Length: 315
Image (cartoon, rainbow, N blue to C red; front, top):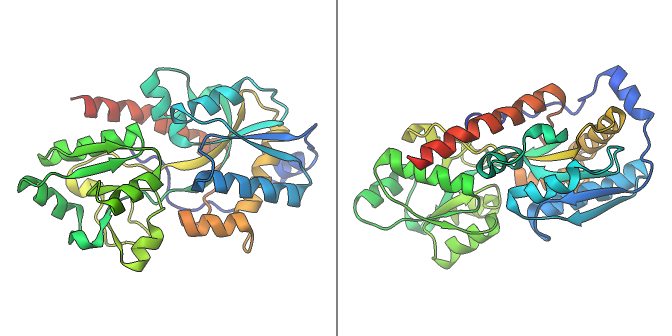
């Protein structure tokens, strides 16, 4: 999607003085159910559970994680949107759940839920094993034009569309292989079942070790680990993937609950020395906090621009 998220990390002080005081008066009326839209054991699930653990320690709240996966996060959205709006049910999804997933399925809108806060963005890039010898995506395109079959691993329909558009704009046909999760792409690359693939940050360790190469940034800006890698715009592609992990609540959520939970999550996500912060630094380049009107505008932009990507991939 186009310009999905700003790259800058927003300061942890996300609430104005009056709003912060408003939030301090709120206490959950019972345990908080934290719906997690990601499979157990993965990076997103680990992030959510670490945040839940630290919320309990810092706030004294009882937080109960619960997996509700499937349909690009829409099952989690459906599970939270009609729950009691008193702050006792929240869900961790990704911004594309309220963008591409909704547009592609022609169901719902971002207004079906209350946006609380993001926690981190992704370092989405196109990666390959270093022993392939490719340095940039341009090398891969030249190989494809020379007759080599390029198997391109993707983990979401949106990324499949971006992969298709990359090929279309550069006159090549990729063999696009869809799998579940970034780890599956990494496994496919290591097993030789794929030649290139999207990585949302899981590739960081392998890139640092020299085992993998980030051939291009799928963001609107350079990748932190590979600042010299070209952008997709260098190859005529007007779409990026700048997803962020996002907590949402039911529609018309109690404003005091929203403010208190947003503040508490931001605090643990940005707390130096905390488990959640350390995990976000290692896997996602650090915390990225967006709330309020800025978050609402970002999510709406993702929703609005998803239709353009779907149309481009349908040509």
